[in-house]
Length: 325
Image (cartoon, rainbow, N blue to C red; front, side):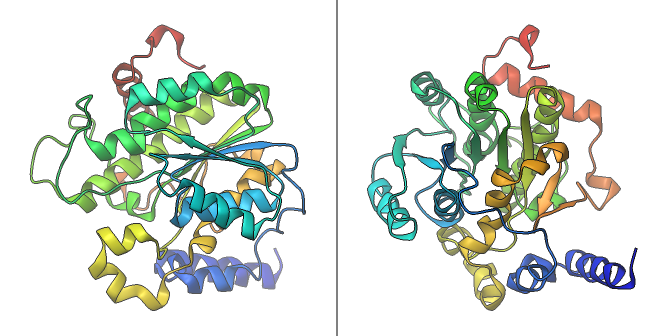
């Protein structure tokens, strides 16, 4: 390793461990040494699905994919705002092929309805939809809203779209998680957050940790099927969700927050980076795999990740005898 490479690695580690790298400072510094941008047209002729694509990181991800030539399907809850999002993408990527699809990923019945209407091949699936309600709530199916939106719905959608994803191989499934996942462990005896005092940020971090754990499970099961699975930490991003759910955090950190495009960068890069197929199952931030955890107290074991998988299989009505292995 050269002295310059060692200095770069040290700087990157300092940015990561001090949290400074989570903001726009990390993005602006790392862009000078990270992996090259995808080649123009890298996703031409390919189809990408992005959930929660009306605004924020989801919209920015859709723009980035469209600019690389993908046919982007915006998977949104309700039609309101969908056409406006499509128009914004078209302005950023003139002539882009776009579709606006309705699906509430928190409602498993709606996920099944939507998936049944999707025909392959699918080359990129980005699980971006997210919520952080201030009061605990449940879907009509009885699942806690964050758990349903971040975990159960994406798990079921991946399962049902697997034929289209394998048809599109080499393909990628990308779970947009959060650095907040570092602060919470897997709580497998209360995945629905029914016990204890409900704290939105805690519930959010728990489900974001579940996303990283599930991405690792999916990666192992799909390793030989041409489908790479990644989890991504987008950094601290100034999104409508942060405005609504974390106003105090935004007030304190606003000068440091990334733009949605900066937060979407690694997801777009992974979608187009063929060499990332070999890096399946990793947790990425700014185009580099990061540790899954920093504290032993919140680390999880293979057995715990497998237990989470079985819980998700059961709650989404999947036959455990037909695991994707």
